[in-house]
Length: 113
Image 1: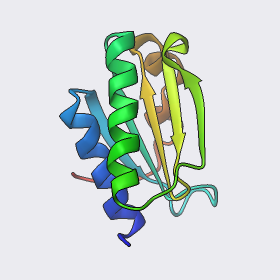
Image 2: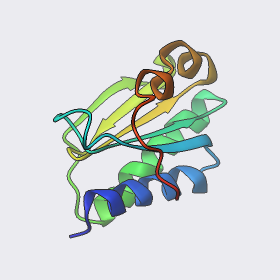
Image 3: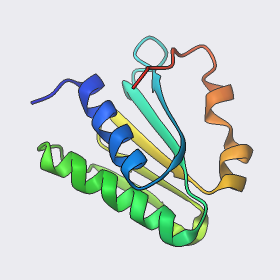
Image 4: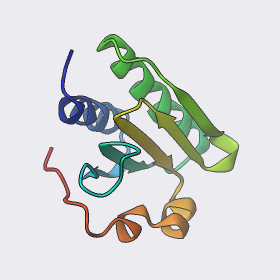
C-alpha cells in the first residue's frame, strides 16, 4: 500500500490526465486530524467535472484504496471524494473561487507533484 502522500500524488496525476486546471496538493497533516492531504482541481464543464472525479476514483481504486464517501455532483459544480487520508475536491471555476480552500488552508504546505 502506498503512503498517503503517494496516493495524493496519484490523485493529482489522475486529475491532470483529465485536464483538470490548477491542480494543488495541500499537506494538512499538521493542521487537522481529519485528513492528511487535500487534492484540489478545477473543471470547466459539467462533463469534465464528472470525468475528473471518475478518473480519480478509478486511479485510487486501482491502488487498492476504498472510497469512503462522495459529496456533491456535477450539477452542484463541486464534487468531494473522501478516501480517508486523501480528500479530493473537483470544483467548477465559480465554486473554486467561492470556497477558496487554498486561502482557507493557507498555512498548509503545497506539495510539488
